[in-house]
Image: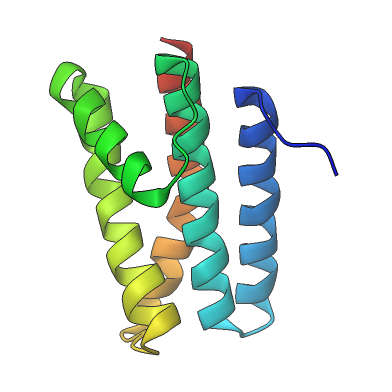
Length: 127
């Protein structure tokens, strides 16, 4: 399997993973949907960072620090940074790892909101 290297390929991967998250949500598997939505968020952020900095962060810690660094220079990135942090905290840690997905309505909305996050990351990547 070839490595995905371009921002466009990584964004496509993020959209595919988000589609899978929405399928899992529709099937009633909120924990798997939450983890897939988190993965889509991370992939979109990686793509945006690759597009804006020329470097693909190798770890989640580097994705987070890269987004923080970019947010110091770019107001649009600040909004993404807070949304990224919310997604990692609630979807990845609380819901997926710990099984604390309540209130369900909020978690479901956060999962759906990842689609908009991906769009916003793509817009920032084009700036």
